[in-house]
Image 1 (cartoon, rainbow, N blue to C red):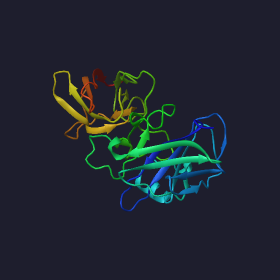
Image 2: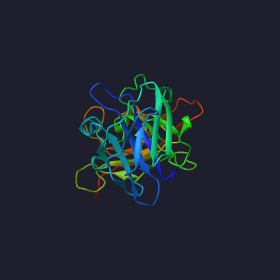
Image 3: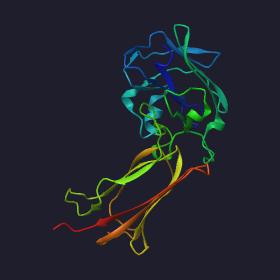
Image 4: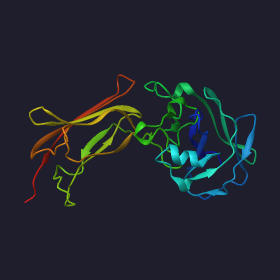
Length: 271
């Protein structure tokens, strides 16, 4: 039924040595048969060759799955399948998912939906932010994040919106000791950003304000994830014992959306 199987990601402007791909998501709690389903562009359609899809599972369909695996490091290989696809134009077009003549989902995409931060969108997929929100809403699609290689075939999208997400930043431990003994050898930083595809900067400072390490320099991030610091400095040494400050900033093309947090932590020696 419509809403059970949805279009979840699309690459319509692949690199010169690559191919388009379409990702489906089974939003239901049922195993769905794909035997009578097809992918089309409004002019031509091709039957889906994969026989079924499990509940809450992703499926990336591409005529060249080896390209997906080689080009996108986060490809979930077991959730990809060979599939002949119709032609998708690089600027705008239609992707149609049908089953037994019933339209399950339809996307009329446009390249202008990509993040305005990107100067080149070749090889960058559009990801659906919310599987339950209307497919055709341009605000429900966003460019895949830089830190996953600009596409996430066969797995959950790098760009997703959660309910009433306002952003958070926290450390799994308030201290760490980088001595390779298996106990708190690195600092783990968990983040959840208030908007997709924000430009992130993260730096470590001493309590006196001296720069120790530039962790992230202007990278596009997905809505949530983790960073680690191994204790190394900009000069290739290991930070000495003491109190440090993490300065984490995220910027959006919307000037009203900005995320900034500062957290203190200790680099210590275990006794």
